[in-house]
Length: 391
Image (cartoon, rainbow, N blue to C red):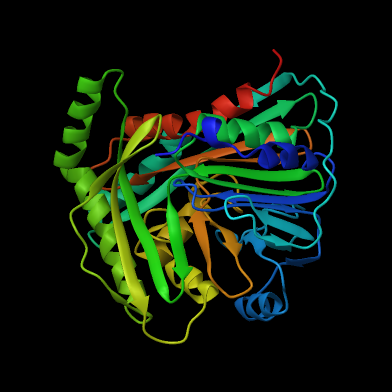
């Protein structure tokens, strides 16, 4: 696995400064560093779109596009990002291959440093009480199998975050995840997600089931012991099987899928997940956008049955999700591209920052344990945020 601290291209480091001078920008890279896309400026933007409008708009673009589809139809205030947006930057470069679209901007110096202080931090101490009725439903109604419920932390800062510093921290602190960043005026969205929704490349699709989690150990032996416990845990295995089965069901109309092996273990600095890659070949004319629509929301971020889970999320969570836990990514002009799921994420809007993470609730769940898991999943963004604060 490649360490981003050792391999960051000099031009990547230089181009990151430009994010502080442009009102619009985008960044995407994958865990293996096969692609690293930087987009600056705006050639075209699409807001509050239908699938048909998105397909038509994308066909008109000559540069890669970046953006996100909102988790559901709930609106997040007056946000220009969280309610769904697609950006075609004026300039895009893949720093891995050197491929460029548009005219390269001149390099900018680092923006002046402004001290940032934490003024207030708000969490959700009543989360377990609000989720308790949902758990009782799961325990008494066999038709209700799983729902993913999240928390949001809110941090009030003395000044807005600086985009270039956030992306550098993302690459440094979370080197082996997907990295997604999107900026529009005084808003930004940042995700260090381990979870691919779908990749389409030359008629081949790849997705993955990521469900079932346990913390990392403090020693190698403890890490291995926890990994074995995760493999043996019936609750986590049942949750993972639900996700694998549902993804396969949704993709069968579109693709011939290869056989699925037993779950692997996917590790991040804070947490270990059960992970099953799923691949196949497209069997009929389709688009990346149709595949995104077919897969979202997976049971890993929504639940089973889907309609009940969606209604439960809206009724139980305190704020709309927007791009949290939603499809975010990029598409090339030829239709290939990759969308991931915006977990381990933060949304900055002026001096306010929201952090999001969630946990899968099943009949066998213990809410105290699920709350601890959410706190564990929030740590990557908490650490990145703390590095920006001068307190």
